Image (tube, rainbow over the protein chains, first blue to last red):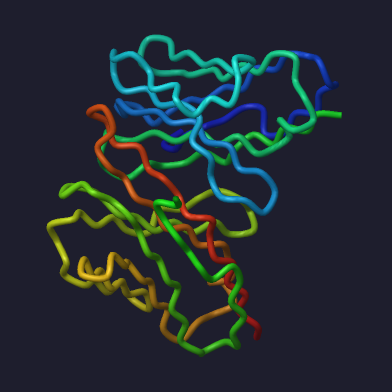
Length: 112
Length: 116
């Protein structure tokens, strides 16, 4: 497709389990962002990839969170030992670097 | 301190009213970018506009207009003759150079409810 694609759309997991969230950016976009949006809140920056440069991980809330981007395209956000406070919508976006970011539909994560 | 402040948490209007959503930002950079996004009930953020710090010219797109004023560090968004379909959460964002990269920082959003 032409837009940013995220999977799964919804994920329910038990506390303590690991989860992987996937993002397929728009083809050709060098920048990829992950944000988190908790209920009624704004967007919290998590991590940023730009080309082959080292990612900016400054927004990751704990060492349980990690992300990688393979081949400069698909990205996976992994949350280990999930906690209830991890419940949120995880948004992925891609862009040209300093231009606007285009967002996917998000993955709604619920930790029970 | 918040980099992007959207002081209006929620605004409720009746259809056909004009409405202005406020955005105040904070930066020490001379080069930066400002954005507005719309998040309808479906949840996906939709890009509306980008402005760079060197272009203070106001912009109009149909019923939407944007007023960028560096003197007051504001980038306000006006919807003229609002419609029910304008009901959404609107986010303002600021992108500054950060270790050579530009990463948007978002405000907390303004929820706009347009009643028929």
